Image: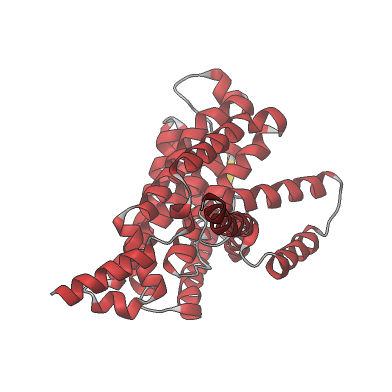
Length: 344
């Protein structure tokens, strides 16, 4: 019994070595406050729909990082949950006239329900096989949406999604005010992800990522934990997809295509895998870059974003956020012994 307790302690100690846990609590609070101020100020300096896209894609990347960075599962099919929620949110908003937050939550719930059978089959595989299973499911959802033209609009998409918000005209007509009305949904998803990785449940996920065989030997049901985090990740992706569709006023097959899954993986890698907060930073880089290139009339956007992705992978192996955090940690580590010698 004592041996098992010792091993459990070792696993939890190793799992608790996530980058977020090495930060001083006061510094962490300061960074969170700074991030909140930046988010609140964003539509004052950036066109509000573009600012909303940054937040939506950033939350989508957080959902991917929850799997990839903290559980070791690479999903190439998360567009299924992003896109399904986009369509369901649109259908609820159009046919019921409910406020868009209710429609978005309904879309996220459907995304989580869809993730249960998908995750049940996918988590029994690892590595590239897991990625291929999720991709296959996403392609199946894409085919269904394309064929169900009476429901989804087929190739024309689902258009005219309203921004109903309890009769508040400013929110329903002005993208600037819509940004602040939709912001709590984004923050809710980000908080859910943070709470997940900061809990004992999150430490078990890290243990499964680092050594699934040992986690299983200690009595943890590895497959069950993977399914649970898969469903949570799908719900967060669903929140992002629902907000995205309401912001644009339509949902299209583009939200379900496999390149959407590839794009969000790219964003996650750019920001930094396993950092959680690197996703929004990577989203800001990609969305702003695409917006600027599109505004200039440049057609080869994929070439530029692909080149930047290669450079980031080669020069910043831990992503933007991960590299900065690593540099700060190195400076603090080097400064510690010197400070100790001076005190002596």
